[in-house]
Image 1 (cartoon, rainbow, N blue to C red):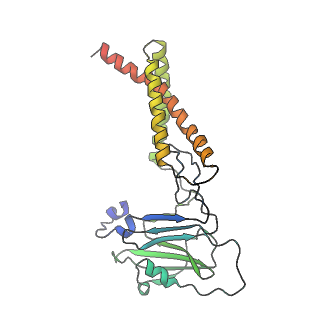
Image 2 (cartoon, one colour):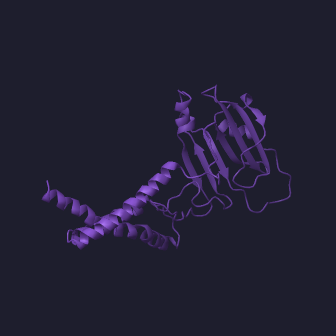
Image 3 (cartoon, rainbow, N blue to C red):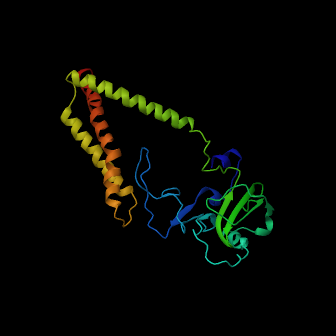
Length: 264
């Protein structure tokens, strides 16, 4: 959307701005706990990692047109028969694109998994003819396994050299300063007798309960034996420090209320 605003791109943007994602697997999609501020086990494009044969991910726009396809090929080839030719036109039809308006190009984007054939095309955007788009596709023994609808605004999601944004660094720095400063001020207030320990405990319990509700309602579950251990172990790691932080920060907030009562 930022690229569209910067280039005065108007009109239908559904194909490029909104996508519905679906993942499937022959095995249970068991999400792993990813470190972060909201560490809830939820299924995403990379969680669990798309490495098991048969895993598939499909992106479509609100009109049901194909935007992205990624399928992990089988681990073992079946039979020695020669592979048939790949029907690339079927991918274009699924994406709502006129293949005759695109010209062949050299592939640049590598597929996620192994592929026996790769192809690429460039052509005009169907809704915005002034924008040149790129289609990358791959197949395994005649079966399509990869499709990408790539525009000038598309950046590689798996770029290892990409540095963290300045906003993320500033946010982390401010969070660290506020946390350390809050602990110092809370300790001084407790020593001065201006802290409410009972209120701090109630506040910490409230934070813990909210975190528990967020974890239970925001996680994805599967019928697996290790699911219970994942919930208990994963939840206690991020929620206990937050509850403790709430207990430590409450005396600081309580001292502000005391100062307001003393000096209105």
